[in-house]
Length: 110
Length: 113
Image (cartoon, rainbow over all chains, first blue to last red):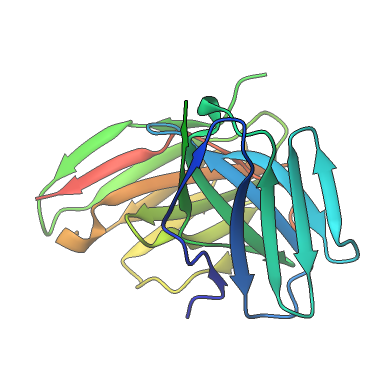
């Protein structure tokens, strides 16, 4: 039962361009959404989050958009940098439980 | 402030054995969660502890168990290991329960032969 889906296993983007990572969820009860970044041999690190009462949250080069009617969120990285190459996990939270997607591997080419 | 510490970093076991993984959360954090990461499956939620009580559990068999001590340190145990248990096991801590960002350790890479 995959409640949080990241349908693109990988994404390749040129340095300086925009990276858009997508995430869909099935449970409308989720009320908090987060993105994490993971480098090899390290644990995931928190990147940005958004509450269900908002539709956009911005932090520097990172912006998360939430479309509740479509049960869809996306992470925009502008401009993309080679150091952004990592696996990105979206997560949805309700109460005491946080469910993660399978991750999208982002390659930013110099 | 020290981050989340997981030990050991790597572990090799054979089928049928049991294993115990350890996690020390960030000082002051009272909630500890465990996740299993396998290729293509993302992070699968195992369980979450708060104040020494298991508050939430994922869809894993009873061979997977855990506990939390009074100092918030947590252990995870897997008994009767199977080949499919080979994975990266991640521990995460947060200050409180509920929708908060999690702070992850580097994980324990378990290989079952």
